[in-house]
Structure formats: structure tokens, C-alpha cells
Amino acid sequence: MNDSTPSIRVILADDHAVVRAGIRQFLEKADDIEVVAEAGDGETAIGYIEKFTPDVAVLDIQMPKISGIEVTRWIRSNKRDIGVLVLTAFDDDPYVMAVLQAGANGYVLKTASPLEILQAVRDVHAGNSAMDPVIMQKMLAQISRKHDEKPIDELTDRELEVLTLVAQGFTNKAIGIQLRISDRTVQGHLAHIFSKLHADSRTKAVTRAISLGWISPEIGNMEQK
Image (cartoon, rainbow, N blue to C red):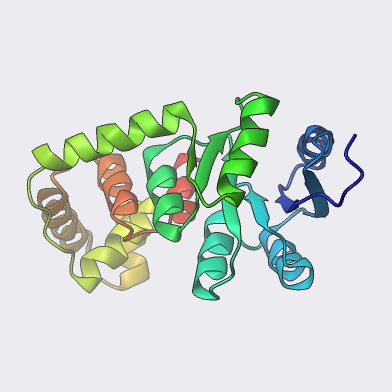
């Protein structure tokens, strides 16, 4: 066992205490890693990052109060010299793109082995990227699709309002009530949205808008619940 001070100081943020305990256990078995704090939500994670100035933040995506994506954006907007490793069960394309666009250095699934996660922490600390093979395949597929996709026109403010309400699970009638417009007008907006996004369903339109960064993944997830 190395008696010197661990060189990689980690903050671990996950809203499941049992998951945190398991991850912490194998992280701290490594001689070169020390978990300096645990957080059960994004807001607490930001507070601990300010207090402990860790080398690496290991974040889940979906957490109470503030998501891992928003914590990552906060880290980058405040120019903190911290490696960000997202460790999550979510491998959906919109989450992958949102995490990477937010500025994370690594994206690893919780199905990864302890050794793979340890190496990911080390890679991120060294300034390298750490991508789960599944995530890497998705990134390559996304790049490939972009070459084949038709140009996408931007939505108007009203169309974006309509699509955001669609993502939250509202029916056409409910959207009309919310925006004080008729059902027929809502249908017209949706027709334009589908045409612009080259989508043939509400779900595909929402998913495409999330991947483009027009709608938050957290909002889009409401439709699936």
C-alpha cells in the first residue's frame, strides 16, 4: 500500500446511496484515488466542488435539484480545472450528446467493470477522454447520420413552445389551452415542426430537438414517464 497522499481527489455524486457506496468502495481500494466527498444531488455536488476543489467529479446524469449535465455546464462556465466523468445507466443518444456538449471528459456506463471505471477516472484526470465502447459506437453512428441527414430548419419561438409542451406530455387540446390557441392551430404548428425536423411522430420530433440542444433532456424524459 502506498503511504503517500493519493494524487487524484474525487467527488462522487449519485442520488442512490447504495450505488455511491459501491462505487466509493472500489475507487478507494486504488492507491492513487481518494473520494473527498459524496453528494446525493447536483446542488450539493456544486457546493462540494467549491469547498474541496477536487481533481475529478464523477457524476450521474439524473439527480434531484440539478442534473449531472447542469453540474457539468456549471463547472465549465466557471472555468474550474476539474475532469468530469459521467457515470450513468443512460445510453440514449440525446443524453450522450447533451453530456458531451456540456463539456464532460468521459462518459462511462454503470455496466462497466470496476477496473474500467478506475481507468476512466485516471484518464480524465490526465486530461484524456474516457468513452465507454457503447457510447463511442453511438458517437460514430451520430456522425455518420449527420452526413446523410437533410438540412434542419430552425423552429420559430412558438413552434419551440409547442414542442416543449409536447415533450412534457401535453395533448394538442392541453397545449391549445396553455398557449391560448385553437387545436387546429396546434396541429398546424406540429405539421411545420415535423416537416422542419424530418420527423414522422411526436416522439421523434422531441428526440431530434433534444439532440440538437433545443430542448433539455430532462424535459424530454417527462414524456416517457
